[in-house]
Structures are given as structure tokens and as C-alpha cells.
Image 1 (cartoon, rainbow over the protein chains, first blue to last red):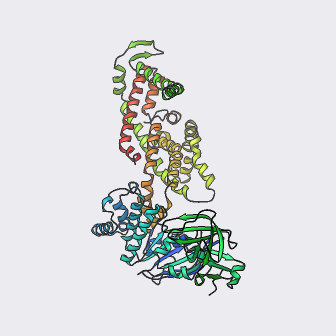
Image 2: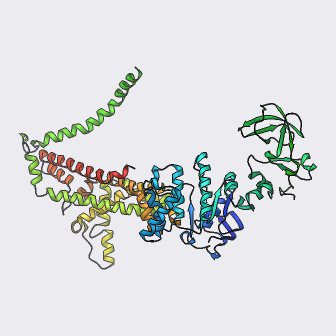
Length: 334
Length: 288
């Protein structure tokens, strides 16, 4: 079981309110990702759930029991830290066994659980080494191992992949998703990377300045962002925003159009512009188009190859039904 | 060509330092070795010729030799124990954010800046004096008979004085070590269910092991040569005669330079035995 409810949770550091009253429910077995730009309070929120920070107001309930004032160890949660926080003077085996040893579990049971975790995470081959002798990905696995042996009601991940290189990050992302499928335990995951959020989450919580901007499934956020901030944050490359005359024609203050919903043509189209940079990825081509008179720079995603170079003229046409409309406050117009 | 030139230049540039170091170490060492084989009594006839190993046998067979070794080891061991234990506790305390942290830290470091002679005199006259000392007043306030520190508890007194001087050094090194501990490790162990004492035992103390090694190594080297504190307090009486103090007495009080030099050679041997012993046991900590 692992249902976490935040009820009017507030956090102040001195006079600064980093998290204004916030309500959120994380259902049992859900993979929830907190995403937002750095300094948006997502890590603080996770630390509040973990109990590493005290709440300034409101209530945290885990499995409908009040956990607001419980110490971290009593909440039945396990956390994986950004720096992995492995104990450098202990072997991998001892690192993983540490929480069980603290729980005064008997040695046979500890051995059984550690061996099991080692098998699940493939760390048999380096179980007797020390963290200093492991690579980043291996350390990450050990940190996850230390979390799963406790059989917690929920896992908390604090930007666990940000210290890994790009290739390893994709691999670990898959592993964590698989782990979730297998364990079916609640996972709360903090990241600033919207790709991680989109690929892993059952439910994404987009945060800005301590405020929840939108909660929903990845595709909900992609198709119907509630405001300009979410629209700009979710999706890569970023959505293009157009203001003024063109937006007014659509009855909005701002319209947004994703790069993949623009068609580019060398001969004809709605908007004319000049290519400044074209990024050829093979599978896709990203064009950065200037001088459209709409926005400073428009990004277009074209499938496959598109033979243009710096200075060439292109014509852009949006897919009419994929245009997002926002009012002056940045809220979505349905 | 270039490397040969630069090598030659490097030799020339390093020469002053090397010559100075050699002069500093080799000249006294050879002179000590030379005199240790001589029968040399400056006020009683001067150089009376070669003595062979007589000085060495006389020094060891003297009734003060083994007690002096024991005293040396007790002082070194006692001071190490007190400075490491209290150093760790003080470092933990100073690591906490508190009001007036800057001033408190300076106050803690202050004893290190006081010259050994001065601090020993201050302790002897202000605290441990049996009639006017603060301890005597304190004892009397409780109706107890004041302790005559220098005679009744001479070794503990010296250990207290020397520990007071070296505690800041230990605290400072251990404090920097504590500050270098990754906060996430402590948080992780907290999440893992380790209460404060176990966090100290399983996370903080292992992290400090290297710093403790450094403290022990450096302090041992200096503590083996403790002299001023004994000279101005007990003058070597009441069982406080260390090896270095014994050598001093042989050379200056008995005016027997040959005998003192032989003692000096024994001191070098003792220091090396302890150094090798320490390197073997605790030096391993420095490897990883």
C-alpha cells in the first residue's frame, strides 16, 4: 500500500514561502513525476514527503494515517538521492543491508533480501566491492537496491539520473520503469527533464514557484496544457508562441503551435521566413526560422530529411486543429 | 637537450633547500652519534677520549631509563586519547549552526597559540596551585582538601596541560573533516532508520577515521618531545621524567654530553619504532 495525500501542505524558510498551501493525492501503485524548472520547489516537496524537512502547515497522510510529524524512518518510504548517498566505507552488500540491520532484522532474512535485490538489479558481480570502485550506473543500481530491500510502501527518487551520461540515462530510465511494472509500488520521482517525465510517468505534476500548474497523464499535458507555462514546458522542442495580429485572428491573446504541427515547404505556405539553423538528425530535421514577423524564432520539426541551408526561404503552415489558444493571463481557451 | 638543461637548472635551484635540510638534519645527527661514543664531560676535564659502547650500556642500565620510557608512553597515550575523544565531540558541537559561531571557534583555537611554557605556568599557578589555585578554591568550596596537583597527581596534571594545548589542533582537523561529510549520506541513513547515535557510529566515525589517523600521527611526533611543560611544572620530579627530559638532565645537569647523546640515539630509535608501528596500524587508513 502506498497512498500519499498532501492536504494544504505549506513550507516556509523564514519569511519566504517556497510552497504555498498545496493539495495532491498520489494513488497506490502510481508512478508520479514532479517536474519543473530548477528552484520550483519540487525537491522540497519530495523532502517534505520523506520527512527530511518539516512542514510549516497542513497535513501529510500516508495510507490515510497522519504522517506529518513522523520521523523519516517511521514513514515506510525509501529514497534514492541525486548523489546516490552510498556509504563509502561499506561494501555494496553492507550498503544494501544497512537499513535491514538498523531494523534489527535477523541475519538469514537480511541475506535472503540482499541476495534477492542483487539478483533483481544484476549487481552480483560487484557485491563485495566498495562504492568508490563502481561506475555511476552501478552506484545508481546499488542505491536503488538499498531502497528496495526495505520493501517500502513508496519510493522517492530525487533527480536520480542527472549525474549519469546521456546513454546511461536512457538505459536506467527503462530499468526504473521496468522495476515499477514488476514491483507495482508507488513511486514519486523528481526531475527537471520533461523527457524523463513524459516517458516514465503515469501522472505528471508540473510545478512552478511551489504552485502546481497542472496534474495529468503525459498525453493529457501534451494535448491539453492548462496554461502557457505547461504548454512551453512539456514537449521537445518547445512550443512556438505567437502573439498580436495573428493570435487575434484566432480569437486569442497568444496562440501556441508545436514544432511537429507545422509543415515546412520550400515553395508555398501560410507564413514565410528565413532558415537560420537547420539541425539534421537523420530521422528528423529541426529548422529554426527567423523573419516570419510572428515571433523572434520559430522551430519546425520535419520528419526525415529536408534539404535547406542557412539563409534559404521556407514557408510554414500550421495544422489548424492543433493550434492551442491562450488568453491574456496565459490560461487555455477551450 | 632541453630536458637536460632544465634538469640541471632544477638541481641548482633545489640545492639551497637540500643543503639547508641536510645541514639541519645531518650535522646534528652525526654530531650526536660522534659524541655518543665519546667520554665528554665539559666541566670535568672535557674530551676524555673514546668510550666505545659504554655510554649506551650506562644509559640503559640506569634506574631511570625504563620508568622514563613508560612515562613518555603514558603521556603520549593519555594526551592522544583525550584530544581525539574530546576533539571529535567538540568538532561535532562546533559543526552545529549556533549563535556566535565565529567567536566560539576562535576561542576554541586560542590555546594553540599560547606558548607551551606560558600555558604550563598559567595552569600551574592559576589552576593547580594548592593554596591559591582556582581548583583549590573549588575543592574548598565543597569542603574538600585541595589536591596538590604537581606532587600528588603529577602525571595526570601534565597530561591535562598538554591535552589542553593540543585539543584545538585535533578539533580543527576533525571539524574540517566533519564539514566535508556529504549531507545526503546522513539523510540517507536517517531514512534507513538509523538514530543519531548509530548515525555517528556507522557514518560519521568511519568518515573521520582518516582525519583521526592524521591527528594521531602528527601529535605523536610532537608529543614524544614534550619538554617545556615538564620543565616549568614538576622539573622532572614525581615520576614525570620522560625520555627527552632524562636526556636533558644527563647533558645539562650532569654535564655528561656523551651519555646524553647516547640517550638521544635511543630516542631516535624509539621514535622510529613508534612511527613504523603507527604507519602499519593506522597508516592503512590513508590508502583508500
